[in-house]
Amino acid sequence: MPRHHVPNQWPQQQALQSFPEPRQAGSSVRLLLVTGTLLVIFFVLIAVLWLVASGAGSGSPLILRPSGIAIIPLKGEITNDVGSSFGAPLTANEIVEMIDEAEKSPDIGAILIDIDSPGGEAVASKQIVYRIREAKKPVYSYINSVGASGAYYVAASTAHIMADRDSITGSIGVISVIPNVEELLGKIGVKVNVLKEGEHKDLGSPFREMTPEDKAIFQSVLNQIYSDFKADVLAFRDGKLSRQQLEEIADGRILSGKQAFYAMLVDELVSSRKKAISRAAQLAGIERPHEVPYGKREFTFSDILFSAGDSFGSGFVKSLRISASAPAGAVELK
Image (cartoon, rainbow, N blue to C red; front, side, top):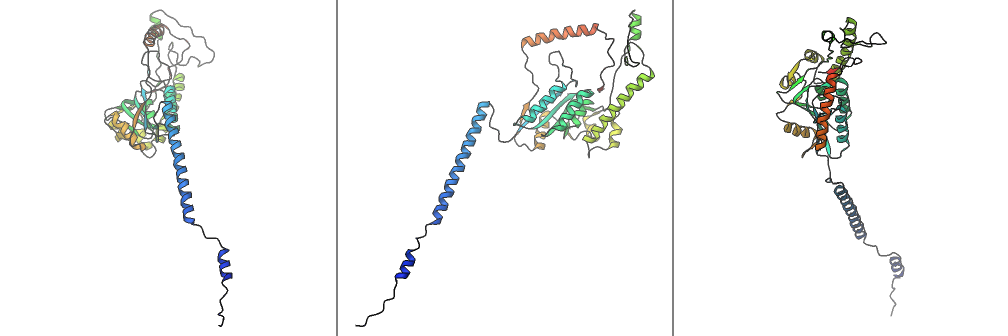
């Protein structure tokens, strides 16, 4: 029988056997994705547990986004003189420290200056103003009953001024009151001898009448402070208040909150402190705000007794003391 030719299939089989069977690449990729996802979830859980533990250990809740509104009170006369009486208002330095504290707090998203003050010392007012201008967090103000002169200066430095329509504000001016008791002392037979070096060293002395030159020196100082006051208010209210509008009302006059609103000294009229806080939160983009009050002092019974005794003693001494070396009183924004 004829032999049929059988083709040689060996090379093809050998070629097929020389290549390994391909692996299932899809299963390897899925395995990597699952492993990576599990690792990410693991590290996220560890981070969350660490944050919760840190918050619990410090006694504060876990904070994901600042939602607190720091309420910093500006009450009474603005001064850096530490009051000795019980319930004395905060000094300018203390208010600056509270702004510092609110800036550092991770819970605070915005600051509201709650104002009820007729003004006060020029330098003390400027300390608060310049600290507000340096703040990284938004600072707003609310004029409650009174926010005049130096207190309005503070309000003007904030991003948004709110006021009650019947509040008292404005009073943009500078004053220095210099008493003269020369005639009174003469009537009761008291003579004061003043020794000095320097022609104007007793400038503003209450024991003699001021000369025209004395008045000119004082007036030049007041003019400079007044000019700076107006320049700062104009800069702070840039785009809201023109120079002409400011000059028309910057003569020391007081205005109601409603009048100040129409005079462009105030941005918004609100009917209550609560609404001012709510509006501050809205301006800062805080959806669920909570108040964080600053400036509350805790007094013990012994503190009250000491304060009462100290106030009586210092008041008695001041009523008897007439300082021959004291110049004029502090220049005030009132």
